[in-house]
Image (cartoon, rainbow, N blue to C red; front, top):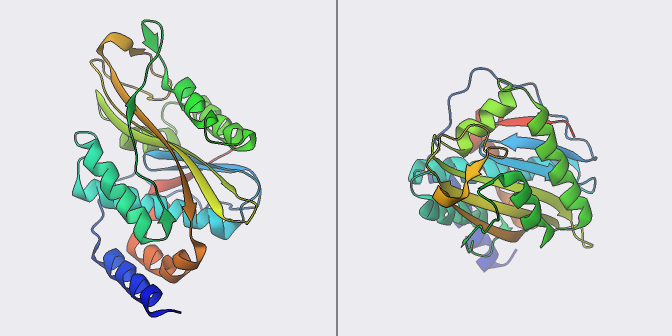
Length: 252
Protein backbone atom coordinates (compact mmCIF):
# COMPACT_ATOMS: atom_id res chain seq x y z
CA UNK A 1 0.00 0.00 0.00
CA UNK A 2 1.39 3.40 -0.96
CA UNK A 3 2.40 5.84 1.76
CA UNK A 4 -0.34 8.29 0.77
CA UNK A 5 -3.02 5.58 0.93
CA UNK A 6 -1.74 4.35 4.31
CA UNK A 7 -1.95 7.89 5.66
CA UNK A 8 -5.49 8.27 4.34
CA UNK A 9 -6.57 5.08 6.11
CA UNK A 10 -4.86 6.20 9.32
CA UNK A 11 -6.62 9.57 9.10
CA UNK A 12 -9.99 7.86 8.53
CA UNK A 13 -9.50 5.53 11.50
CA UNK A 14 -8.59 8.48 13.70
CA UNK A 15 -11.63 10.41 12.43
CA UNK A 16 -13.98 7.49 13.21
CA UNK A 17 -12.44 7.02 16.64
CA UNK A 18 -13.10 10.64 17.62
CA UNK A 19 -16.68 10.77 16.32
CA UNK A 20 -19.45 11.29 18.85
CA UNK A 21 -22.86 9.84 18.06
CA UNK A 22 -26.36 10.76 19.14
CA UNK A 23 -28.42 7.56 19.21
CA UNK A 24 -32.21 7.80 19.58
CA UNK A 25 -33.78 5.96 22.48
CA UNK A 26 -35.90 3.05 21.27
CA UNK A 27 -38.23 0.70 23.05
CA UNK A 28 -36.71 -2.64 22.14
CA UNK A 29 -34.04 -4.28 20.03
CA UNK A 30 -35.24 -5.76 16.71
CA UNK A 31 -34.38 -9.25 15.53
CA UNK A 32 -31.32 -9.62 13.33
CA UNK A 33 -31.70 -8.76 9.66
CA UNK A 34 -31.54 -11.40 6.96
CA UNK A 35 -29.09 -9.99 4.44
CA UNK A 36 -29.54 -12.46 1.59
CA UNK A 37 -28.55 -11.74 -2.00
CA UNK A 38 -32.03 -10.68 -3.09
CA UNK A 39 -34.10 -7.53 -3.27
CA UNK A 40 -34.50 -6.12 0.23
CA UNK A 41 -34.91 -2.87 2.13
CA UNK A 42 -34.45 -1.41 5.58
CA UNK A 43 -35.28 1.59 7.71
CA UNK A 44 -32.03 3.17 8.89
CA UNK A 45 -32.94 5.85 11.44
CA UNK A 46 -34.21 8.72 9.21
CA UNK A 47 -33.49 6.91 5.95
CA UNK A 48 -35.09 4.17 3.89
CA UNK A 49 -32.54 2.10 1.94
CA UNK A 50 -33.58 -0.36 -0.79
CA UNK A 51 -31.30 -2.92 -2.47
CA UNK A 52 -31.45 -4.62 -5.83
CA UNK A 53 -30.59 -8.33 -6.01
CA UNK A 54 -27.05 -7.59 -7.17
CA UNK A 55 -25.55 -6.92 -3.73
CA UNK A 56 -24.27 -9.56 -1.34
CA UNK A 57 -24.88 -9.55 2.39
CA UNK A 58 -21.58 -7.95 3.31
CA UNK A 59 -22.12 -5.10 0.86
CA UNK A 60 -25.60 -4.46 2.24
CA UNK A 61 -24.26 -4.45 5.78
CA UNK A 62 -21.55 -1.96 4.78
CA UNK A 63 -24.13 0.38 3.25
CA UNK A 64 -26.42 0.20 6.29
CA UNK A 65 -23.64 0.68 8.86
CA UNK A 66 -21.88 3.50 7.03
CA UNK A 67 -25.04 5.49 6.35
CA UNK A 68 -26.17 5.04 9.96
CA UNK A 69 -22.79 6.21 11.24
CA UNK A 70 -23.04 9.33 9.08
CA UNK A 71 -26.53 10.12 10.37
CA UNK A 72 -25.76 9.61 14.05
CA UNK A 73 -22.52 11.60 13.85
CA UNK A 74 -24.24 14.44 12.00
CA UNK A 75 -27.02 14.37 14.61
CA UNK A 76 -24.41 15.02 17.30
CA UNK A 77 -22.89 17.97 15.43
CA UNK A 78 -26.01 19.70 14.14
CA UNK A 79 -29.76 19.67 14.66
CA UNK A 80 -30.96 17.67 11.65
CA UNK A 81 -34.28 19.54 11.48
CA UNK A 82 -33.24 23.09 12.39
CA UNK A 83 -29.88 23.16 10.57
CA UNK A 84 -30.16 20.70 7.67
CA UNK A 85 -27.55 22.32 5.41
CA UNK A 86 -24.73 21.95 7.93
CA UNK A 87 -26.12 18.55 8.89
CA UNK A 88 -25.78 17.36 5.29
CA UNK A 89 -22.27 18.77 4.99
CA UNK A 90 -21.11 16.74 7.98
CA UNK A 91 -23.12 13.69 6.87
CA UNK A 92 -21.25 13.87 3.57
CA UNK A 93 -17.85 14.26 5.27
CA UNK A 94 -18.40 11.14 7.37
CA UNK A 95 -19.35 9.10 4.32
CA UNK A 96 -16.25 10.34 2.51
CA UNK A 97 -14.01 9.37 5.42
CA UNK A 98 -15.18 5.76 5.35
CA UNK A 99 -14.80 5.28 1.61
CA UNK A 100 -17.78 6.76 -0.20
CA UNK A 101 -17.22 9.07 -3.16
CA UNK A 102 -19.84 11.75 -2.53
CA UNK A 103 -20.47 14.75 -4.81
CA UNK A 104 -21.84 17.73 -2.92
CA UNK A 105 -25.57 17.90 -2.25
CA UNK A 106 -27.16 20.68 -4.31
CA UNK A 107 -30.64 21.40 -3.00
CA UNK A 108 -33.45 22.95 -5.00
CA UNK A 109 -37.01 23.75 -4.05
CA UNK A 110 -39.52 21.03 -4.87
CA UNK A 111 -42.01 22.41 -7.38
CA UNK A 112 -45.43 20.79 -7.43
CA UNK A 113 -48.88 21.48 -8.85
CA UNK A 114 -52.09 21.66 -6.87
CA UNK A 115 -52.86 23.00 -3.42
CA UNK A 116 -51.49 19.94 -1.57
CA UNK A 117 -48.92 17.23 -2.31
CA UNK A 118 -47.36 14.07 -0.90
CA UNK A 119 -43.64 13.35 -0.88
CA UNK A 120 -43.76 9.68 -1.92
CA UNK A 121 -44.43 10.69 -5.53
CA UNK A 122 -41.70 13.32 -5.44
CA UNK A 123 -39.19 10.73 -4.21
CA UNK A 124 -39.86 8.40 -7.13
CA UNK A 125 -39.76 11.25 -9.66
CA UNK A 126 -36.42 12.39 -8.22
CA UNK A 127 -34.85 8.92 -8.35
CA UNK A 128 -36.10 8.23 -11.86
CA UNK A 129 -33.73 10.91 -13.12
CA UNK A 130 -30.61 9.04 -11.90
CA UNK A 131 -31.53 5.42 -11.11
CA UNK A 132 -32.06 2.32 -13.20
CA UNK A 133 -35.58 0.87 -13.52
CA UNK A 134 -34.59 -1.90 -11.10
CA UNK A 135 -33.36 0.59 -8.52
CA UNK A 136 -36.49 2.69 -8.87
CA UNK A 137 -38.55 -0.48 -8.50
CA UNK A 138 -37.01 -1.50 -5.17
CA UNK A 139 -37.32 2.07 -3.86
CA UNK A 140 -40.99 2.10 -4.82
CA UNK A 141 -41.50 -1.29 -3.17
CA UNK A 142 -39.82 -0.10 0.03
CA UNK A 143 -42.04 2.98 0.21
CA UNK A 144 -45.13 0.85 -0.34
CA UNK A 145 -44.01 -1.61 2.35
CA UNK A 146 -43.65 1.28 4.79
CA UNK A 147 -47.06 2.64 3.79
CA UNK A 148 -48.78 -0.66 4.63
CA UNK A 149 -47.37 -0.89 8.14
CA UNK A 150 -49.61 0.12 11.04
CA UNK A 151 -49.05 3.41 12.82
CA UNK A 152 -47.38 1.84 15.85
CA UNK A 153 -45.13 -0.60 14.01
CA UNK A 154 -41.57 -0.21 15.23
CA UNK A 155 -40.25 0.54 11.74
CA UNK A 156 -42.75 3.37 11.34
CA UNK A 157 -41.86 4.78 14.75
CA UNK A 158 -38.15 4.47 13.99
CA UNK A 159 -38.34 6.30 10.67
CA UNK A 160 -40.85 8.97 11.66
CA UNK A 161 -39.10 9.87 14.93
CA UNK A 162 -35.83 10.44 13.08
CA UNK A 163 -37.13 11.91 9.81
CA UNK A 164 -39.11 14.85 11.21
CA UNK A 165 -40.43 16.77 14.17
CA UNK A 166 -43.85 18.44 14.13
CA UNK A 167 -43.27 20.95 11.31
CA UNK A 168 -39.63 20.36 10.29
CA UNK A 169 -37.98 17.38 8.64
CA UNK A 170 -34.87 15.88 7.09
CA UNK A 171 -34.81 12.39 5.54
CA UNK A 172 -33.27 10.31 2.77
CA UNK A 173 -34.56 7.60 0.43
CA UNK A 174 -31.87 5.53 -1.29
CA UNK A 175 -31.70 2.78 -3.88
CA UNK A 176 -28.54 0.68 -4.04
CA UNK A 177 -27.23 -1.51 -6.83
CA UNK A 178 -23.92 -2.53 -8.35
CA UNK A 179 -22.25 -1.20 -11.47
CA UNK A 180 -20.87 -3.41 -14.24
CA UNK A 181 -17.57 -3.45 -12.35
CA UNK A 182 -19.34 -4.71 -9.20
CA UNK A 183 -18.93 -1.35 -7.51
CA UNK A 184 -21.61 -0.51 -4.94
CA UNK A 185 -23.62 2.46 -6.16
CA UNK A 186 -26.20 4.35 -4.10
CA UNK A 187 -28.72 6.68 -5.70
CA UNK A 188 -29.99 8.97 -2.98
CA UNK A 189 -32.88 11.39 -2.73
CA UNK A 190 -32.30 13.83 0.13
CA UNK A 191 -35.02 16.09 1.50
CA UNK A 192 -35.52 18.71 4.15
CA UNK A 193 -38.58 20.85 4.77
CA UNK A 194 -40.40 23.41 6.88
CA UNK A 195 -44.19 23.59 6.92
CA UNK A 196 -47.05 25.06 8.93
CA UNK A 197 -49.00 21.91 9.76
CA UNK A 198 -48.11 19.12 12.16
CA UNK A 199 -46.67 16.30 10.07
CA UNK A 200 -47.63 12.70 10.81
CA UNK A 201 -46.29 10.06 8.38
CA UNK A 202 -43.96 12.19 6.32
CA UNK A 203 -43.89 10.29 3.00
CA UNK A 204 -47.68 10.17 2.80
CA UNK A 205 -48.65 13.38 4.56
CA UNK A 206 -50.69 15.88 2.54
CA UNK A 207 -48.49 19.00 2.64
CA UNK A 208 -50.01 22.45 1.99
CA UNK A 209 -48.10 23.76 -1.02
CA UNK A 210 -48.54 27.45 -0.20
CA UNK A 211 -47.00 27.16 3.29
CA UNK A 212 -44.39 24.42 2.79
CA UNK A 213 -40.76 24.89 1.85
CA UNK A 214 -39.56 21.49 0.63
CA UNK A 215 -35.97 21.21 -0.58
CA UNK A 216 -34.69 18.19 -2.48
CA UNK A 217 -31.39 16.92 -3.86
CA UNK A 218 -30.43 13.85 -5.83
CA UNK A 219 -26.98 12.32 -6.03
CA UNK A 220 -25.08 9.18 -7.05
CA UNK A 221 -22.58 7.84 -4.53
CA UNK A 222 -20.05 5.04 -5.08
CA UNK A 223 -18.30 3.00 -2.41
CA UNK A 224 -14.56 2.32 -2.58
CA UNK A 225 -14.66 -1.12 -1.02
CA UNK A 226 -10.87 -1.29 -0.74
CA UNK A 227 -10.99 1.73 1.57
CA UNK A 228 -14.08 0.57 3.47
CA UNK A 229 -12.50 -2.81 4.13
CA UNK A 230 -9.79 -1.02 6.12
CA UNK A 231 -12.29 0.83 8.33
CA UNK A 232 -15.17 -1.69 8.51
CA UNK A 233 -14.33 -2.98 11.99
CA UNK A 234 -13.80 0.55 13.32
CA UNK A 235 -17.26 1.53 12.06
CA UNK A 236 -18.83 -1.53 13.69
CA UNK A 237 -17.07 -0.82 17.00
CA UNK A 238 -18.10 2.82 16.95
CA UNK A 239 -21.76 1.95 16.32
CA UNK A 240 -21.87 -0.67 19.07
CA UNK A 241 -25.50 -1.64 19.66
CA UNK A 242 -26.72 1.45 17.78
CA UNK A 243 -27.04 -0.68 14.64
CA UNK A 244 -29.53 -3.02 16.30
CA UNK A 245 -31.41 -0.09 17.77
CA UNK A 246 -31.56 2.01 14.60
CA UNK A 247 -31.85 -0.45 11.68
CA UNK A 248 -34.84 -2.65 10.95
CA UNK A 249 -35.77 -4.67 7.89
CA UNK A 250 -38.63 -3.93 5.52
CA UNK A 251 -40.14 -6.85 3.62
CA UNK A 252 -40.57 -6.01 -0.07
